[in-house]
Length: 136
Image 1: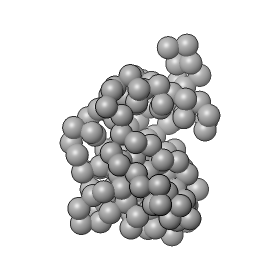
Image 2: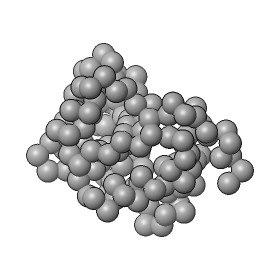
Image 3: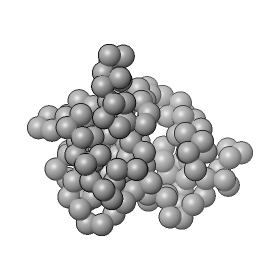
Image 4: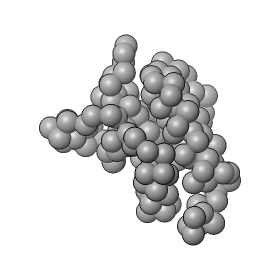
């Protein structure tokens, strides 16, 4: 990967909030493939994510599943954007299906990007590498 050196940033912290354990594992491996020095935090639901974020950790990026039980992505996004410490952290809405009508609503709430979950690992790594280069 030619751009790997540019992404080596020991201070990069990525938080992924997703109720699917398999998706969390794939995402973690993709982040580590793209940037082995990145810290990738995983939360299985909104409650766990909010707990992680309360412990003074401010990630560089948050990847947020839209469709989760108990507290959905829209509710989590609204909470994140009300928190002064987190209001400027880029949030990528990350889901298996993203309704085009929902994207406008999420963008109005402060979502920065939308990503359909990739079926292939290489595709996810390529997307992450491009996204992280662009936003670094």
